[in-house]
Image (cartoon, rainbow, N blue to C red; front, side, top):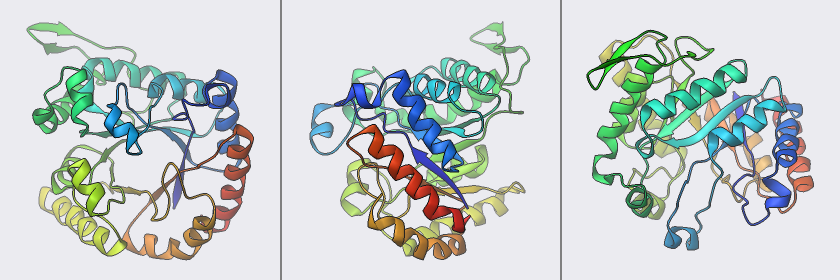
Length: 300
């Protein structure tokens, strides 16, 4: 089992604590020192007020935030969780991703999703109803841009260098609970990243409900069946937020629950767990990350 830990860069209410270069560096070094395999940030360029009022959050630009984390560390992987593909030109995404991968020595994990926030899509001028088609088109465009060779785009021969350090490209993890997201992951990516979603959350985000491991297991079985159907031989990482964890809860009693539940996640086929670290100060964040690192060390 491998573990990705949240950087608290969504705490825009405490910029001096969490958003400065020194803050990001300190949190990233704490995560690396605690033995975590990756650190992650989210992606919300312009969220709507109604969603923020109901528990949503702001976020730094993920590539900029992870670049600061990369500069302060040497080993830990840099995980976008999740970058919304339809929000940007895929060629601009490819350039930012390749830049970060090269500059970090090949440490990027590109977690991506189709998105769901209607207000954010509208503000960015993107047709939310086409988010799945745009995501599929973006995945193809990313791989073209990362090829390191010239290709045709809009009637012109173009190329995008540098190519990523990781070849043929950084690992792509596809987020979402739907069968369409699973198929997208199996056919186009190296990992599938579902998330816990009780019925109310599932309705709000427009995805399938996953409220327990019993809900997750049939979807992993579907991923395996689809992999066999399409002739996929490469293993598919399954990346999950453990039940009881989120960006705003999970560093207390849930750590003990994680130790108890880990065999069940392994048995279900989960290969990575993503953990949230709620905190009010940077010192508290670092202390909790170290405690979580101690808790997971015997589980690895």
